[in-house]
Image (tube, rainbow, N blue to C red; front, side):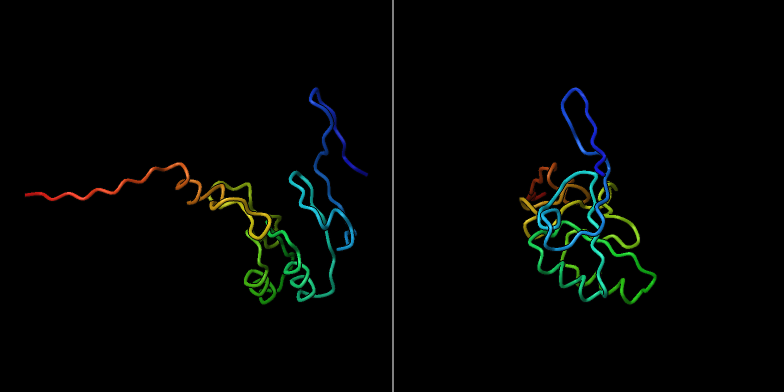
Length: 131
């Protein structure tokens, strides 16, 4: 059941978890921004990575495991902008760059971290000869 709320501006969906999601579903194929997560259960890490590689979006993915080998393999092979390990996507932290890759990325910068500072910084080059 959706967590639908209403305020003076209209309706919105509150924090919602969709379980039992499969690659054939619209919610799997479209990128949703908001407090929404789609849970896709797979039988093995290679199946998960294959699904991620085939996805046109690459904002983020997370893995829940106690296996350090799976963790390192997932981080290296996930092909997304953000990886969460035993947590959701780490986007809310100001010291981490937020942004995806593939069709989840617009422009040349990430929103936070060093890219965010660089975006709002004007650099000057100075050449000075002192006699």
